[in-house]
Amino acid sequence: MMLKSMVASDEDEPAVRDVKTAIRVNLEPRYADPGVQDLLHKSTALDPRFKSLLHLDAAARLRVYNDFTAELVTNIQGQATDTRGANPSPETTDDRGSPPEKKSGMAELFGELFTTQEQGTKSKVKVIEEVTSYRELDCIPLDADPLTWWKTKELIYPHVAMLARRYLAVPGTSVPSERVFSTAADIVTLSRSVLTVDNVDRLIFLKKHLRI
Image 1: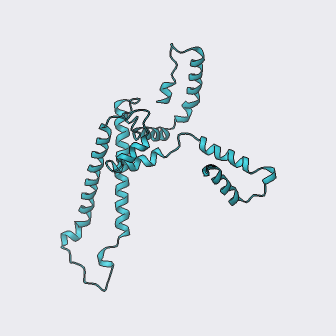
Image 2: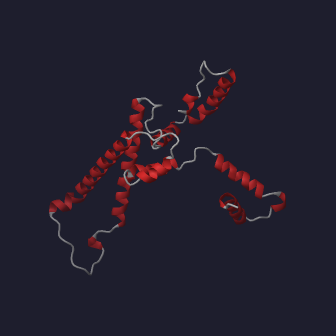
Image 3: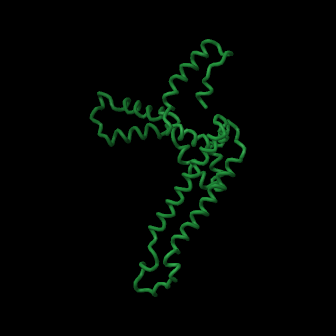
């Protein structure tokens, strides 16, 4: 989307055309990695201002939504597996209690398998319905705050909101981290070169978070 907006047009002044060309040449190699493109497309889809993905063709839009639907389903199934592993079966929790309920042969052989499959199918259907409902919503205004929007909608779209927290938390630029290094250079000088690592960390933290 950024690269498309930087395409020079005949209506641009020569200086504007040169600036756009320079920006485009600088940005193109940064976004050539398919993994980076995938991350950016998902982040854009999870931003309620741009979730229509109008800068992509119809097939690419569908692929982006299918990809993060599959990611949500995988996450939910992984959480279910972890929960089952963390909770021991009643048969092994207390040997002093009453004997476990005897299962039929069919339940013993296939019960856990089909219960797991049924739960997985229900979770997948729920996620697909949630993603479809989110996709069909109108985009919010460009000057609106997407994080505030998600705060009010996270109960309606809990699974998609979980993915939004993961992707929208990624900083858009490296400027904040570069500023941390600049702050460290201001703190550790020749006259303060014996500061311990812990003290440097504390001073950087206070510099960034303490409002005076």
